[in-house]
Every structure is written in structure tokens, then in C-alpha cells.
Length: 235
Image 1 (cartoon, rainbow, N blue to C red):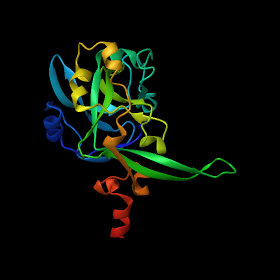
Image 2: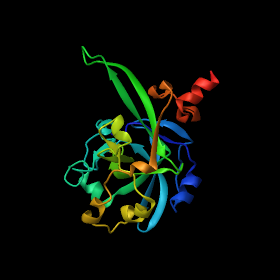
Image 3: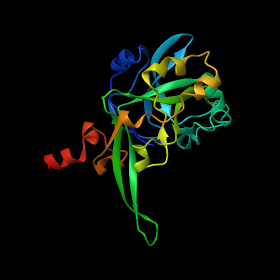
Image 4: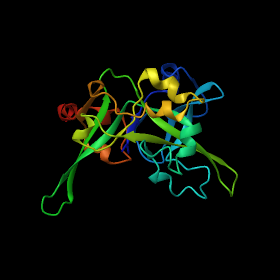
């Protein structure tokens, strides 16, 4: 799965990289994005590509309330075409969620009880330091009480590559730059989209341990992306 990531770049920087334009009010640099946090995502509507604000955790248009959003931060690529929560968004509302890295944890368990004794966090990023383009879906939900619209998103996951498999059995779908246009194409058909839902090449990613400070969702700051050795050097 993908349950935490870093999104430190400015809307202007993201707009330049993804050939879009920033709209709306976006958050500042975020190094520890957690479920239900606001995030920036790249969307294309009527041929206009923008970087806009969404809340992480999809609320389907047919939902009666927002309660399930925290559970819908990820969509499994294997079932996204048929899942009631995601199939409409897969057909019509795809997006890219930029991230400089995502975090995963290696769980150390007590051999006798199976309980987790320690969680060791890692950051996974591109070796060339370019942003990850996470394949996402978005939805617009209308609050039946207030008529206010809420825009939310989710991140697709797939089988892990060799890098991520060392710590987890799922990873986010990371789109190659050559696939950005195809994923955002409003006229794309399911057969073409399906070919994009694959693990990223292992050679393009690197994984390294980071400070346990990232375990706390209230922690934030660029030091969360420092390799653990750098934390040791500054103490």
C-alpha cells in the first residue's frame, strides 16, 4: 500500500514539471502526508491540465457521508475496473499525485507472539531525484446537508518490485514520464490504461532508512527525508 508520502515541491514547480498550471489554494511543503490530509494532484479536464487541491482518501460520488475516506487512500489496480468505489473514477477521473518519496515500514515481530516490537521506516524515491508520478483517481462529492463539494483522491497500488518487496507486499503505481499523457487522456480506454498499472523498474528506485520521527503523523520537515546516517551525524 501507500500510506504516507512526501510532497515538498511548490505548485509552480509541479506545474512546470507536469506541463500544467496551478489553480486554487494549495498547501506548502509537506514531508509527511497522511490519510485525509490535503494534497496536490495533476488533473486534466476538457483538455486543460491543472495542479489542484484534493483531500487524500476518496469519497465516491454516491457516498452518503465522508466516514470511509480514511480507508480509501489506496485502490488495488487488479480490481479498480470493477470495484464500486473506484470504477467510475477509473473511467472518467484519473489524476497524478506527485511525491518526492513514499514511506514504508519493516515490521520486526516477536517470534513468540507475532506482535510488532519495532517498526523501521524507509523512504523510497527515484534515483535521479525527479518526482514520482503516482497514478491516482479523484472524485467530487456533494454534501447532502450543505451542498458543499469535496474533491478527494486515491492512489493506485500494484505488486512490489524487487526494491519495495524487501519491506512490503504492495507499492504505488508509478507512471513513467512517457505515460503521463496517456493516463490523463480523458478519451483513454480501459485496455490502454491497464497496461500502465505495473510495478516501476527496480533500477529507477532507491530505498534507504530514515528517522523514526516519521512514525508520528504530526512530524514534518525536510529532515524526515534525510538518510538515517545523516541524523546520526547531526546528533
